[in-house]
Amino acid sequence: MNDLLNFAVEAHGGLKRWSKVEAVTVAACVSGETWKVKSKIDYLKNVIFQVETKRERVTGDFPGQDKLSFFEPNRVEIKRRDGTVIASRDDPEASFRGDEQFMPWDDLDVAYFSGEALYTYCNTPFLCTYDGFSSEELPPIQVDAETWRRLKVTFPDTVKSHTKTQIFCFGPDGLLRRHDYTVDVLGGAPGLNYASDYRDVDGNHLSNKAASLCVRRRLRACEGASAGQDRYGRNHSRVLLACCRLTQFISRCAELVRKVGLPQ
Image (tube, rainbow, N blue to C red; front, side, top):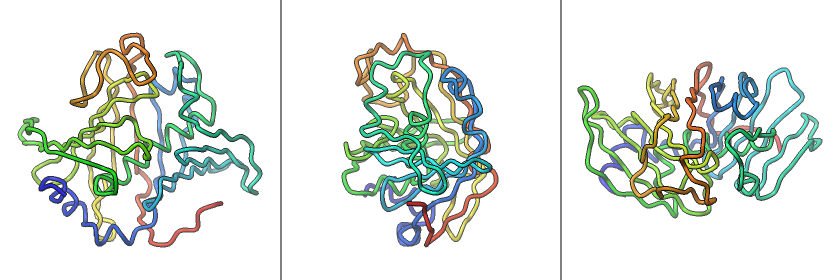
């Protein structure tokens, strides 16, 4: 573990404490132009996610609806509360190949996108210490009155996330300030997640609010990211880079639990 990663991990509560956490529960309201374009403007308006820490698995609970979503890297499902499978898809990432910018998403697409995103968001920075991950410190940047140290992280092929190479920016206190990435399933659209309003939950420091922004101009959010085309061979300039805002990311609860009964 390099010096910056160690500094960030300790600032967020340390690996010893995090190793006792089985899942993070997130009550979220997600909206923005990207969801409007994908015909899912209010789909995640009221949803409770359970994000596991020991394996890549995310469960979505939709209050007031007879519906649960399940994400794993190679399969997504939509089920009723009694366990009846409504819809499922193996190799869900493949469904995004050839996806045009205005093509609507179905419920399984949303389950995949939200799952791979939240697994990364909720497990950062501890995720970067897991087997198969590699990281290196980049030159710092000055943002307003702060110096942000930057960690370039390469994800293993076994972990699904926005893209393979991402950058995490940490403030002088070691807490995450910004997460820079591109989104493969959105044609390589660059995104920036700003974290703020940290709270202490059983010694772990979690961001209580996050704003996610996909900019309207070409931007290399991650050094080393491919230019011109994404991994599906689509030209970046043809993709709608719409503004997307993630509001109340952990607005109603940010609960770390050591033992949680997840629906099977």
